[in-house]
Amino acid sequence: MTMSNKKELSPEQQEELLSILKARFEKNMNRHEGLAWTVIQAKLEANPEKLWSLNEMELTGGEPDVVEYDEKADSYAFYDCSAESPKGRRSVCYDHEALESRKKHKPENSAMEMATTMGIELLTENQFRALQELGDFDLKTSSWVQTPSDIRKLGGALFCDRRFGHVFIYHNGAESYYASRGFRGCLLV
Image 1 (cartoon, rainbow, N blue to C red):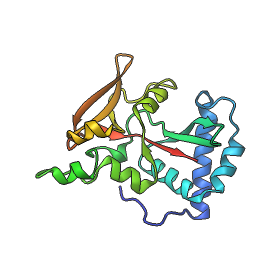
Image 2: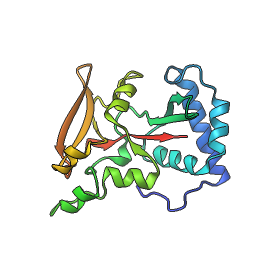
Image 3: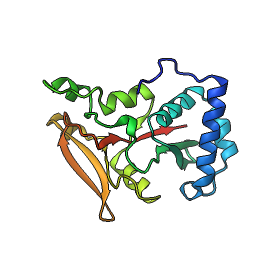
Image 4: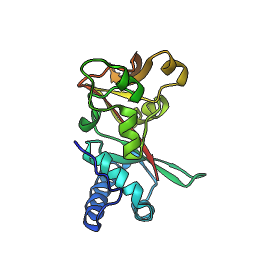
């Protein structure tokens, strides 16, 4: 799936995306009890580049939704809430360095590069665990998560999934990629 170079949506695209996000917000109130969609929508409309990033999350199968409000920073966190790792972001290695290190059978992209292009960040391990408090995610797939620099310097990267009712964190070579591994993102608005 190719991503747009233009980082703004047309009024029609904005309206369509806001409609999708509102419906998802209302359907999943357990993810954001006590928050009001009208306030979130106003904040989104005031930040068109964030709407563009949310649209990229949606286009790649992430099903973004509000999962947290930080009162001190006055920011809302949107996470990818698709049941499995987003389809349009699978079969990617961890980062550009890992992509360049592959001699044969290179994937088309890396998780970190895609996230940067989309204007989002990979979930941290803690964010992945927090997401699992809201439902069961990645029961058949896995998702790359932000990896500490000391692990990355040694050639590794971390990923998570949920199996047997528990969240697991694993390691793999950063250059590895699998059809069932993608990444989940976070966008602060």
